[in-house]
Image (cartoon, rainbow, N blue to C red; front, side):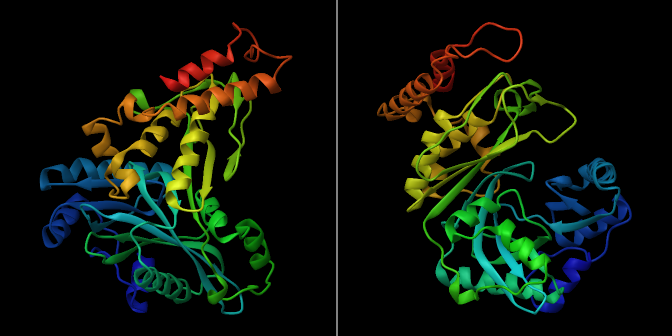
Length: 386
């Protein structure tokens, strides 16, 4: 693609692959034979995991190519497919950049986006726990170089794949603010929407690279209307009760409320839950509490699964890659005992219920919008503990 060609010209490392779209599965097999399996089919106009297929052996190429082409055509109106060598155990690291019309470009540090399913991000954090200052500086410089190579202006993201040996490769550039931008806001103190508007209006960047400082650690969980117990199938229906968490370091960005209809025709993302802490350990602890307090009734959500991730040994230790979810599902999730080892989570849930009782005296027990049996807040809390 044009992006890969520009990155090569600018000296930004790229994953071995094709510079032009491949025409059919026969051509794709020839490229794969040269690169070596596994390979990744990617939509030229893609994003969000759509139009992407991993191919492990030649016999799988025809069906995978058809599926990727069809999905890309349906999602983007552009069925062109190119090929990259598939990295078997990478981490997905991206850098937020800001660029004005006057030639100034800065990066705001990285985001760790390796917790994903079917190439769709689910949990993000900033900064990454695997980057030291030297690698952060090297990757940040590459991100700035990438933005300058294409004359980019405004807010954007340069995404990389990082292998187990510390080598990184350009993945793609997103010319927008992404879903996960709040974690960068939390650790930099910047309002990225405000900065984006200022840049679009032609103003100069109000700070330099030397002014950017990362403070603490932030984690974001995407809350989807999906059923983790049923292969993450979309959950549709009316939201009958909703009570978001609060407290120190907690932020919730959402656009739903009790009475909202969750349709099968739109993306199932309900909200973004963000937790900030002075370090990663505190951010994880705050996210656990917030997930326990988060109450949504009427549809299934990814809240229980996000909570399991927050307790998983590999996540807590930072020893994970983009295959974490598949491996976790195969190996089994965190045990109920580990989720409530010392009883503190139960106490937090109880405190949340008492808070709700205090603030919903007139409405308690909570009655779903429309017809239906009243739902006790105690029952809602019990469901969270199961």
